[in-house]
Length: 210
Image 1 (cartoon, one colour):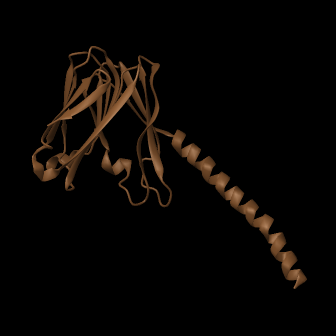
Image 2 (cartoon, rainbow, N blue to C red; image 1 turned 30 degrees about the vertical axis):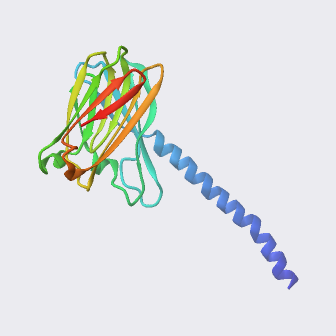
Image 3 (cartoon, helix red, strand yellow; image 1 turned 45 degrees about the vertical axis):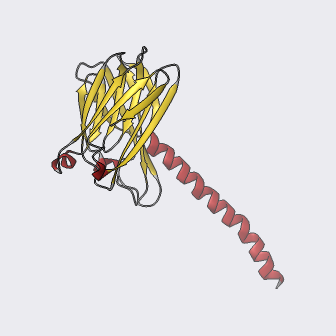
């Protein structure tokens, strides 16, 4: 009885040590994956450069993430932010958004070409209806959009694939350089409200209209 008790007590520190080593190994590996750069995209005239980091493939167990940052003429412009995350049950970044294009010098769009083959495309229009430049804009729908330095009175139009689900979702976040504000919208796909969506950037707010 005494030997069994001593053996159990001796095994506890060993189990703790093994668990600690395992946890540290996972954290170190995750930091390595998150810092691994796998893509550089430069705007047509070379003004902006976007870099992607992380794991674009679907994980076996754990949640993985894709991050981005951006430079303007080689100088830091957009600090590292999360672009995508998912686990083994979610679509990976490389499957969901393998293609990219620059619809304008200051706009980058990630998408999947095959998604545009199903039905007619929807349209998202971003209008800066404020008196200040919108320095950084991020939009999430069926595509992922990054916009840089949208001037007052300016607008951009993006074609986006139709949603494959019952609802269409839209999320926008705007950084004016002074403050940051966001908005989201979800509508039934068959409501007719997903075809054309206008995003108005106001003073300190953003509004989505159909």
